[in-house]
Image (cartoon, rainbow, N blue to C red):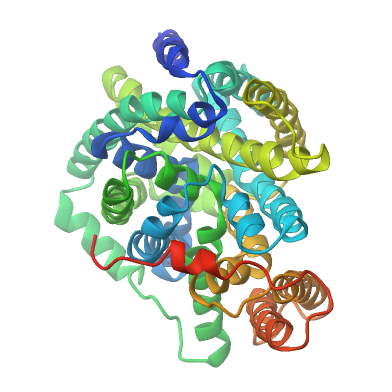
Length: 488
């Protein structure tokens, strides 16, 4: 019966996506919802895209295993990036009137920087999108009690997302995210209330977490531990800024004020609501301590199945429907954003320049849909062959953009002297130094991604101040065009 309800839910989601597809007439409609979303829809797209399978399954279980020290990147870093974007980047992004974040690199620097950063940003999405397809596979496997293998579930999930995203684009994401946000909030609050009561109430669950030392952020004052925590936080809070999915939600708003407010509200609500799955996870520990310990100590990624198994064993059918509805909502909303965002970058900032940049709008729209199919297949293959946990896949994704794309973006937006030469050196120095550090000294006191960020900043400053031998002066007037207005 549960599988039937889930099937109905998936059909409703597909129907909403197809309804939204009627609004798509141009590439701007497909990739940016026609710059038309009101505040409530913009807020929903921000929250629903960020609140994914990683938050429900991986962050909650990581909190059980490592406490707050293990979840510094998400939710703390993840919420911080949205606050930073709302305060400093949303209005400039919106004012530039761009379709993708890759357009900024072209307009501020040149096509070389556009294509180079576009490739890096696209590659970073493999991990994030794959994590959500893996989550769909796990979800279908648990729902069918093993009848659907995880691999088949991954392929089924990819097909569902592709069906409603293919024609609806960002409009489909906006409409389904609004529906899915309601399901996420209602479903998880219901489960938290039910399981919390079974575990002895709110105070008993919180006391258990405190007794187990789960609220300790720093395990020690050792330099290695402090830098590890700082690196996890910085990777998420800064590396995510140069992501297309964040940019898409900003530019899909109806005006710059809505863009800033929707992003801020989405970030703050995400930080608060991310503690609900953690509360449910600790409730699971109180209710089934042996099961939780065994899954945390199990092979591969068994710990990600703690909540689904607890719900199946301790919650009546109505609660199971709400939980898996919330879980599927979280996964589908994030997966759709993680697939459309790199599709936009590939179409607009890699393939279009390689084809000479002369594409009519309808051709660009058709190419976007073809690229979406190709990228979805690539992500599915990556997911089928990955053994990393969802949490690891997501954190690794943002290391790429942190060392390659963040510095050219931030300096290009707020420093008039930034040049194409500086941007090129920043990307090259950041990527090369990070990869070398990962190969040579991955466990060094200074984490590899901080090494890469440091070299990226050095490359930007040195390359911009030295005599130009490549790339020309760029277009510093873009800084004036995007001048930041105070307030939200």
